Length: 216
Ligand code: DX5
Ligand code: ZN
Image 1 (cartoon, rainbow, N blue to C red):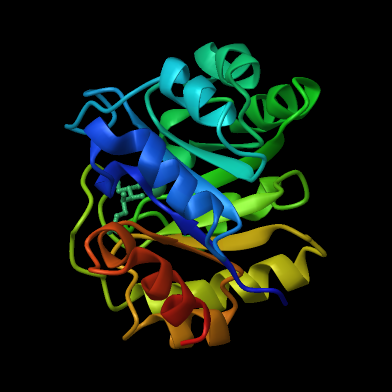
Image 2: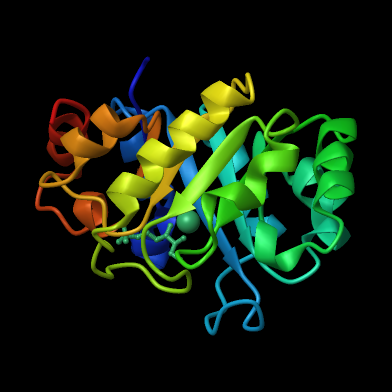
């Protein structure tokens, strides 16, 4: 399976967003991870469709939008218009998750499902065939720079088993506390896409950090 890195712009300098985007665009990272928070589903508030739209103008790489908002179905068309490629919603935030995933497809995007650390793998059982991506949160969502929850590694293996059993082609993405210490074992456990915020933007040489994570 190809390894994909999705640097999280939450850890970028927001005054230098254009420079950060150009740097990632020229790096080996194939995706841009964009964390949308509403101050309700998670305690933090970040940015919305206008920022996604601005980044869309700077890159042709995949825009991987992670919605940490309540009732995410309200904003599907806005993020499509902004240029999102993958739109990921939380299992815990969408009452009619199956319908939400269909609506994301109908809008012309790839649909992702995210699970908080406390949410069991089986929560995606009935939507595995519909999902293009399953995002295993390895920290409690809301902030960058948190410590990786060690039990997430084994959760990734169990998610891989579930997807195989369900004949699902969904990619597995891991988000939170990813670094050069745990990247290799996450890829080995079945992760296809690793999100990295601090490990990239907190590094002295972010482009080299991306390479190290991909070759870990
Ligand atoms: C956390 C976000 C993450 C975060 C990752 O709620 O979903 O994408 O930015 O940042 P690091 O890699 O620093 O944990
Ligand atoms: Zn995220």
